[in-house]
View 1: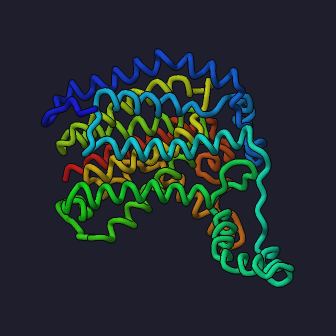
View 2: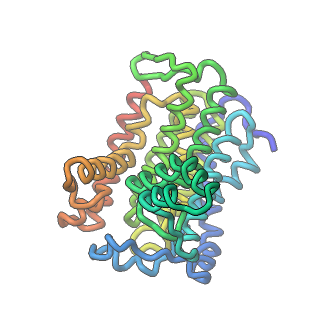
Length: 375
């Protein structure tokens, strides 16, 4: 397929894709809802959340509702906005990240227990295993085993789904694809980090690990924030709406259409996800859309504003990092529970109050991010 856009598209034309995407998502949403309920695609609640009142009504709500957005965006982009210079890599990264999330969702529901050895057990095997070749193998693979065990610190302790170290490896691949595309395909102009008020930093090849880090962190940030009905969907609408505007202003028509298409599908998803939710986003949606948000922001040269364009997502992720550091360094919790939305919920905020206040705070900082990007 080739792009149907020539030059800078009219803003009304771009916004038309938001409407089209919204309508298409509404048309096929009953099919997805029926499939999710028919096959009982229900993950169940994490044990640490069962004591929170608002979480009790979510035990029988299907996950993987994010497929509504992922599939709608991918299909409409392929047929109406396919451009090998600007849209195929964002879609590829989105689909790769979404596939990772989908496998994780399905394994958590239908998978069997998966256990890994503790480091103490591996050290013992290195010393006492009867087969010298196996002792050598355990010794050679010790760094990988250490990575596997330490990665548990930054993720949930699941015994069914994809383990944290496996997620990080696949997310690294998605980030590398993005970095390769930005550095090698889009040209030398993308070797700079552009900051507000006409400041820029030449990063050269160092832009590659920086981009990988942004893509990985952003995907996980959206995944972390997806913990209440409507929370992630509503904030993603603000973020992708801002990207639609900035893409159009900066002259990236294909990316503007991609962002507008995402906004429309997200509007339909959020309609069905508002309490009481018909389905939840799941890792398939949060990881895919988080990666897409990062890729599209980087592609239009707005790295300098990305923190504010995705403000609450990053704050939620940082709250988890702070909680982990507090636990392992200070020996105590900093928040009542991480991520941050559960901290306020435990303090007595209702789910509705938490969501609406987070929406408003996020929207204000997104506006600030747009303002910065225009300077």
